[in-house]
Length: 560
Ligand code: AMP
Image (cartoon, rainbow, N blue to C red; front, side, top):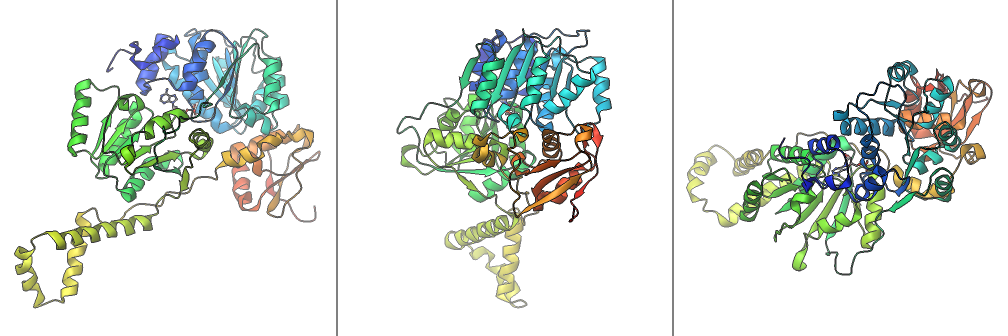
């Protein structure tokens, strides 16, 4: 290990977290708490209830996961879980369980994700062996409670994560039923990106004098924001490093800083960029002052063109000539965005701020725009064709510079010896080809797929409707682009609208708002989905379980 995790340098030490957790954070390369963690962790560790308004990307998962691991007794033998985290989707259930597992590794935490669509047998086995933390979707958690396979009598903390989304999916009653099974003495934590009245009402009924946390309310001072070009690219996580390389190829910054969240990420990105032919250097808090000074000197001397850094390492760093600030991911708080991009466009010079965001993080981009009062333009990633054109352009510029500036006479003997045999134009073309190849050659890359549609923005538009399927909100009129799917399972199997919505959204990734009217009869159900997504949904649902059963699914036959 590079340094003592208990040193206050980690910034986490002051939050009252136990040594095992601090160690895990150091290993993960977290250098300091995000603002939401800074505010939420101390009251949660002290046992308070809490309502936090925080979107994906703020670090909210660690904000609730670390405190619930704080009181865990390692190697407990009793079977019942002590913490329950309710989340809207299977994807989130997996993500949150992985996070809890990573943070709690040294404590030997036993965490189990529980969601529909996964064979229930595996979950039953794990539950009977004993777990500490259950992370689940409300429908499946309720299933387990009803079967008697999940007992909530030992629960000390319940977390409702992305509560607004769970209500959107029609899980309000399930949540109430689950809460009723937990001890009254429990600590209750609610995180939600938005705070519609129904969330407030849940908080009022189920939380006791909660601490309330809202992020990013302060505006920026006039003059604090430099006038730089601000743009963002939406990229799915697996393609982020490739996308960064491509953006840099096209932008060709003279001197740039790439901000990452963790030390690990800094090292990975540095490696990727060096592999792409850039001279990139890592700068993070795990390095000695000496190492950092050397990096800075190389940057000033121009032998390094790219600095890859965490916020902590970049603090107080004064580089005059930066042309680009690039956020490898959306910063955890709008304020740190302002802080980061304050490094370009100094003294009236031109500069660019570029942000890579996952589609789910679009809400954070909006929060930044609100804070700064400036627009961030969404750009399309350069395609392979764009890159090819850009590289040819670079070859052309190099040739032009050489014709204008270099002494070319000594090469004339080669030219003369060839002109007897070949056309001058052919000779020139061959020379261009060789130069082009020597400079990196043609683009040998696949296209980066466009990410799934940005669900956050669409949800935000319809959010205030705050529908509940069982109150009829789901009965939207059919629209022209919709197709009805038949599911061979209905009321007799206990199917409710939220089971269908949850299973479809969870299995196919279709946005909840794209699911239209639902009709449930005794033996079957009909669900409207957008026609272009119909086959994808049918495919995804082939193996899926709804209320513990597999159901036939196909397009509705006309005439039904
Ligand atoms: P979340 O908003 O919980 O989805 O977290 C967003 C991302 O930030 C996750 O990939 C976390 O691993 C990462 N993260 C959370 N807290 C920190 C921190 N204090 N320092 C660096 N990365 C963090």
